[in-house]
Amino acid sequence: MEYDIHTLLDLATLATTLWVIYMIRFKLKSSYMEDKDNFALYYVVVPCAVLALLIHPSTSHHIVNRIAWAFCVYLEAVSVLPQLRVMQNTKIVEPFTAHYVFALGVARFFSCAHWVLQVLDSRGHLLVALGYGLWPSMVLISEIVQTFILADFCYYYVKSVFGGQLVLRLPSGVV
Image (cartoon, rainbow, N blue to C red; front, side):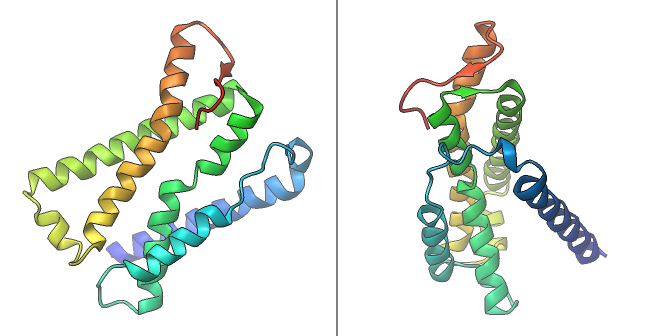
């Protein structure tokens, strides 16, 4: 039953992601700022792929599934970097986008806190349950990395909100 729910959620996530990609590539193409989007994706994808080949879970699943899982964990940790780069290049972030990225940062903080507290509460047994080798530590490190990537943006968001600004203005060199 549990695997059925996870499979259903994965399919729903895939369908939603494909719909978003379709909307961005075709329906909302006119709003795309190509000149501001200068982040080379291979700077994110290649290191994640290499890391996934080297450090992946040691479960009974097929090796391709384990490497793909690891790749997704690593890629998720840095997936917001291209969007943050666009925001850095534009220097001004629209309220809707700022609210979304801030909410993403808060969600990542709580997810990271959950993982850290679970590891501490289980006295490290959770890491053993995730497998052996470097994989369990890399899952936790990925959560922490993603949280810190978004923490900088969240700082400027909170500063902007308390300053009464409707539009978030990022200083140079942020992100």
